[in-house]
Structure formats: structure tokens, C-alpha cells
Image: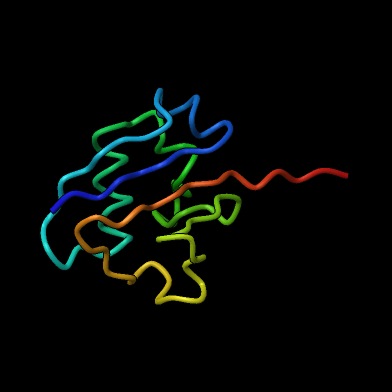
Length: 94
């Protein structure tokens, strides 16, 4: 199955593309997708994953089909064929 990945802002620069297509197995969780993505695009690893916890960083917002993953099933959200996953860096300032 194919999932479209979209990168916004600094993540677009890190990935080298605005969108990517990732082929994955049926029933893939979002966490598995992030792990697969960071294997295929290691430059994104530092931007998306906390190295110690091996979990997505809290400064990256992840949407699946326009819905933030906290209103879905978090990182256990299953992606389906044709889904769009968007990665948005959260900018902090003071």
C-alpha cells in the first residue's frame, strides 16, 4: 500500500522534498512508518526522533488525513492505502 508523506517548513528542507511516497505493509502503525521513514531518510532522524527515547519529538506535529494524531490513536494510528501523513515542525519562540 502507498502512503503520501508531506513535509512542511524546515522538515521539507531536511527531507529534500515536499512530498514522498512510501510503500508499506497493510496495518502499519504511524510509529512503524516514522521508523521506516527515518531509515530511508536518515537526515530526518534528528528532526523527528528523540534519540534517547526513540519516539517522535514533541516539537513535530503529525497529521493523518488532516487530523492531529492526538485525536486519533496517537503513534498507534494505523495508516491505510492512500492516506496522507503531514509532518509540521513546531516553532517555539519567546
